[in-house]
Image 1: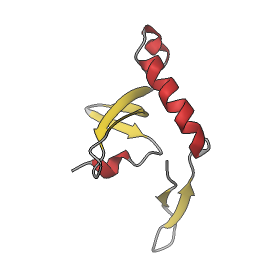
Image 2 (image 1 turned 135 degrees about the vertical axis):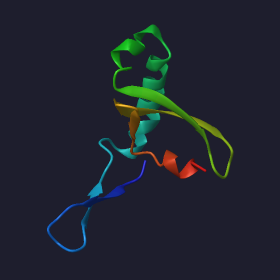
Image 3 (image 1 turned 135 degrees about the horizontal axis):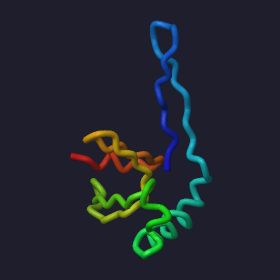
Length: 92
């Protein structure tokens, strides 16, 4: 979980950057993520499945397999994922 810099559109020639912090402290993800993953693996997943899904990927350096819950939204044929984790760094 890292802070992300999100460009903001302004009337200036160069966009200003806003620091977006995770909604909960970094240490809390060690509790929340496994809890959400466990719920998403049970019949109770229906409570969360309309907004959360599990994303599994391999670490780019370690090769270790990670599974984290991420928010998602589908619009037409596009799928948008939302997370404060840096999982996207592992994409080839």
